[in-house]
Image 1 (cartoon, rainbow, N blue to C red):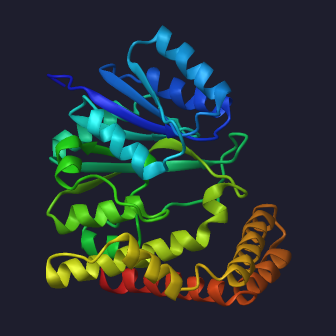
Image 2: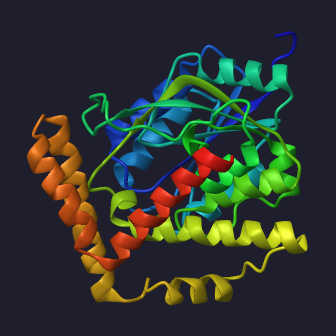
Length: 322
């Protein structure tokens, strides 16, 4: 490419093990695209081992800038703060426990510029905590030639840690909004309703680490509710040209859907853990055991039954109408 604009790689870290952070950072510093600014926002000032490693790394490579929050502020704050101080014309997201392919930034930028997109997402390869590829983990894929906005309404097909985004688009939309575990999905749908272009490079360019006991797994129900809430806001914008998002409105939505019902939530988490075990059994060839676990995990919790029903309905609607 004739010019080499600055790309800011934005990474937030909380309690990730140092070996994960080291692998993630190394995969970025060794990219074939060299004109990088690497912003690392540390959201846990007590994670002294990680801070020590990051400070040592920044002394060896002046492309690294570290900001340490005085207290835990959450992912949305970290990302929006990083966006506000980023020097790059483009921003690449990176999670502290993932690993980017060697040519990720170069290929994403070339694809984005060639097709004049405002955001590009790529394929992923799922790995477990030890780095082993998980064949059964798939991310929803965009179907070329079909209506992108409708597809995105039914399923979030953008893999957040793979994205490369024009910073000016993020600035105009005021970045991310606080919607638990769905702040990225909200941003993508706002991209589309505001006329910005999203492109998909199906080539896998990131190893995404999956943990069955991790925070994202324990918060699976709030992820589901967040997606439903984001779709509600989308419908409001399409009808009224605006949405009603506020902290109060969001909390009322969560309450309506039993998020603050401790007993119901515990039953859901137990049910979802059983579902994850069923997937593990299936990978190990224990099909009958997996089937029994799948069935029981679905009927053991009313919240889980609703989740499965809505997800199945959306997949059918995506297939029929997008």
